Structures are given as C-alpha cells and as structure tokens.
Length: 327
Image 1 (tube, one colour):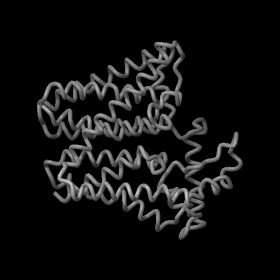
Image 2: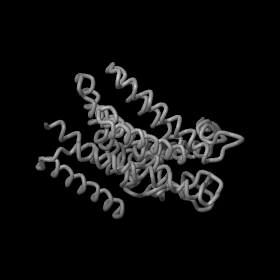
Image 3: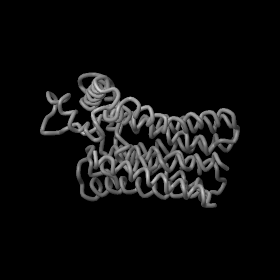
Image 4: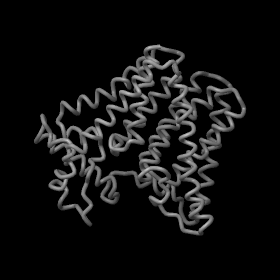
C-alpha cells in the first residue's frame, strides 16, 4: 500500500504542477504540448523502426515479435499504445497547415508511426489506430474541403506503403505476418492472451462482489490474484495486473473508488463530446477527445495507470482541456 500510494501521490503532485502552470502561465499549453508530442512520436517510432532494421537487415536475424523492438518503453504493448495515443496530433498538423514542409513531414511521421505499429504487432493498438484514423478522416471529409480529400488519399497511400515496407523487412514469403497476427483476434480456446485476460477480468469481478465497499486494499491485487489464478499459473508468473484498470481499482479500493476514477476520466470525455456536437470549429477538441479515447481503450485492455509514459499523457490532456475550457 505504501509503494502504491507513493506512486499515486507522485501522479497527484505532477498533475497539480501541470494545473498550476496552466492556470498562471500565459503560454498556450495546447500548442506547446502538441509540438512536444510531435517530437516525441518521431523519437519513439524511429527507435522501433531502426531497432528492427538493425536486427533484420544489418545483422540478418529472422523477424519474430520480440520485446527487443520495444523502443524507449518497458514493452512493445506500451510503445504501441503510446504511438497510437499521440498519432491524432500528427493528423492535426497535417490538416491544419498549408505549408508544404510541414505536410511532407507529417506524411513521413505517419509512415514511421504505422511502420512501427506493424513491427510491434499489438492487436489492441491496431484496432485503436484504425478507429482513430478512420474517425479523423471521416471528420475531415465531412468538412467537405477538396484539400482534405487529397490529403486523405495521400495518407492511405502512405499507410499501404508502410505496410509493404514492413512486410518486406519481415521477410514474409509463405504468409502475411500482419494479417496472420490480426486474424488471431477472436474469442476461442486457441488464443491464450485473450483467454488469460478474460480469466483475470472474471477474477476481479468475483473479488469486487466479495469486497464491494473497501476492496482488498491498495496494491494488494498482486497477492489476491494468486488465489484466483493458482491453477493456471506457470513458471511463477504472477498476474500482477487485471489488464483492466477500472476492474483493478474496483477490486483494490471498492466500487466507490472505481466510480471516482471513472468520473475523473469520463467527465472531460463527456464534456468534449458535448462541445464537439455544439461547435463547428472544434478540431482541437476532436483531437483531445480521440487521444482520451485511446487511453480508455488501453485501460480496458492493459494497465496504463501503472505506466507513467501513458498515464502522464492523460493528466496533461486533462490540464490542456481545462485551460482551453477557461479561455
């Protein structure tokens, strides 16, 4: 509990610093944040692509899904969702700028980002990326600009080019690695990853039913989970996380705590929907809304609240939203 509280206090203090900075600083936090994200996604995607290139092309290794290609984060799933969460900002600059250099740069970043995602082969991130990109393209096409149609078409060409590029490097002669990976996304007894998550979700729900008010204690799921999953544990791999932040928080601190956590994330999500619906000029709000959507998808499948690279993004997004709300 002390270790977990220390982490939450660090998040709270960081959020407070961000909030104070946004309240008393005259800096346009949205502009600053978006530019830093643009730099960040270039670094993250490049680290993945170049690590694969070094292993496969330079050293002649055979491609397989490996944590060696995780880039700058702890594992490939975290990197994949981090890239997807930041990708709407690239689309924002692409459609919001008429400068040729920025447009070309955005196409290149989209190429690097999609290539990195193909190499990482994280199915949840694939689905989130498709949903986000299609949503953005639909929004831009609804605005009915000839320039938007052209840019959407070029983006599709960029995505297909990155797909061909990555598939060539993977050396997939007999089968398509990307399609083979995505096609395994189905609920059956063959997919251990999905079945494992469903097992964890069931255990967390059972725990919430037994301890609905106080839960099992902050940080205690790593111990309680052993009781529920003892017959399935192999090689001492303890299920530290439920792979669903909402259920894990509910299991650890009860339903009331889970509702507060849901409110913290979904209130700005709901208010953004209202603002987008009632406002014609809301492109930035659409971007923030989609970025929070990616975080929610990640929270339903993984544990971003325990990963600073993901959770700090949410805290900054909420602060950026609050500053825009006050201006």
